[in-house]
Image 1 (cartoon, rainbow, N blue to C red):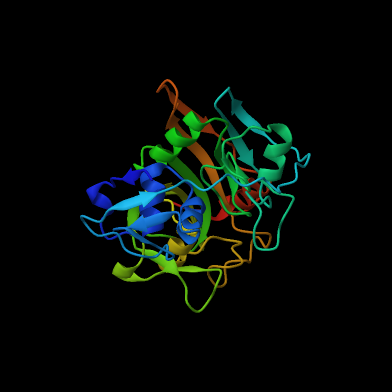
Image 2 (cartoon, one colour):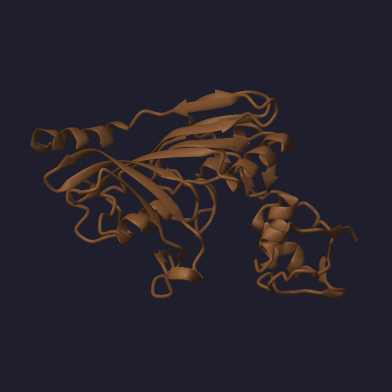
Length: 303
């Protein structure tokens, strides 16, 4: 068995996370390896991905066999902003799931990608998927076609050198021009689909925002993710009392202008090309439904 030498910064982390970060594996692959008895800690085979890694622990591992994909290729139209031999950048529409899950085995971005490109690198049910945005969030995603792209983009996500800029209409006129939300997140024990701020016991989550326009009862924001936790922007904005307009899961009283999902758009994506290091910058315009709501607010804009 190969022996893993994790970075000292991973001391105290879950073993599946240590494997994933050290080997640039998807998290689910790391969990699978542990549950199948392919990982030993100090000579003992483990079955719990949640076991904490301690300084000096010896980790030996084997790579699980690749699963044969049960994902069905589907001809779903995609807006491809950029493509080369290593990667694609997709402008995902609102309403399209990124990959199968939660009772949705088909009709996802992953199904569409597999139809277009059979050899995408990544998990069997998430071919090429490096990062995700929620079903009802629109905007830019980078997709890996090769291992070089997958590993390189993952690394940039982990070291925060990939920049993701979002735009949102939120409830309430925010007084600050810009601010940082530094509030750890974890699953909400009272709601299986939600995440909430839980203090020091959660995972680090940092969001920066800037007010672009103020209105009587709403604000138009630009947001930048430093970390990329599930539902991070939506949970953080609910936490500060300014939930995203249209969000069916987070906030109250924030579905008066729009009822078909959160008005949240991943409008800018910046990263270095994993193969040659050149800087890549992409922008996606606000969707028409988003612009219509924004324009409806402008006659009552405040200075």
